[in-house]
Amino acid sequence: KRRPPSMLLASRGRASARLISAAALAYIPGSSQASGPRRGIRLDVAAVIMPHPDKERTGGEDAVFTLRNTFGVFDGVGGWADAGIDSGEFSRSLARHTAAAVERRLPGSGECVDLVGALREGVHAVQEPGSCTACIVHVAEDGKFSALNLGDSGFRVLRSLVGDVLKPAVQSTQQQHYFNCPLQLGTGSRDMPEHGDRYSGTLHPGDLLVLATDGCFDNLFDDEISSLLEPVLRAERDASHLASLLGEAARTASLQTKRRTPFSASAKEHGYFFPGGKVDDVTVICVRILARDAAVDGHNEELPPRSKL
Image (cartoon, rainbow, N blue to C red; front, side, top):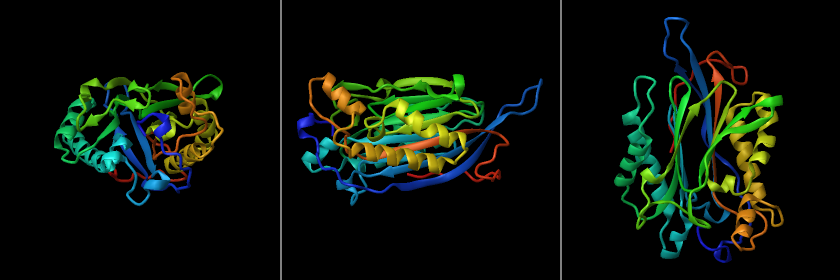
């Protein structure tokens, strides 16, 4: 990974999904207004991480955190393996330190968190060698969100638009120095959290927020993701089902040698021949945006927020 396609790992094994953050409901109260009642949204959150088949023993190079209303995915740069360095240790350390920095910054009002500052603090705290990409999204009390993306992980806000067709209402774009070399934070890199793209918008009940590493977005086009999740989201399945379904679909696509994928299309545009999917770690966080009184699979009790690294 993060090397010319001629040097990419070509093994196409199988690995099962590992649900690392069970679906949990966190109520986010809205700000009160003199003209109306209190408003609020509920977040149904789950994350799945699937290590590269050749890296299951070490857990792969992706990392993730899910806080009450802030979420992040980190993808270790695999090229460090040539120097005998497991960049998964770097990405997991950065996820842990960034999550702690976010918690210290969580406001008591509807303000947004300083994601750049939290990520900067996380980078400074990491002691392990290596580098990784980062994508972090914070959802404020009023449904407004802010996001920071550096590298080739990313996020999508999927929303049912005209005709109830699920489409990305907001989406990040990949940041790369050149093909298969993303912006990255860590040892020897001049990239900094400030170089990440920043996004903002408002989430509404019925929206689905998806964060994922490139193991997902390199293997599935946006329309494939929407077509896969639309009927399941309409059936009001919980976030754990959505995350598992998307992760498995990305892994299946990565193992197909003749399938057209975003990565194969990008490789062709840059003059490389790399047919089929790209086997990689696959990490997905799904966040369902629910109305305050909405139920999930027949339950509407409020559960305590969870955090998982």
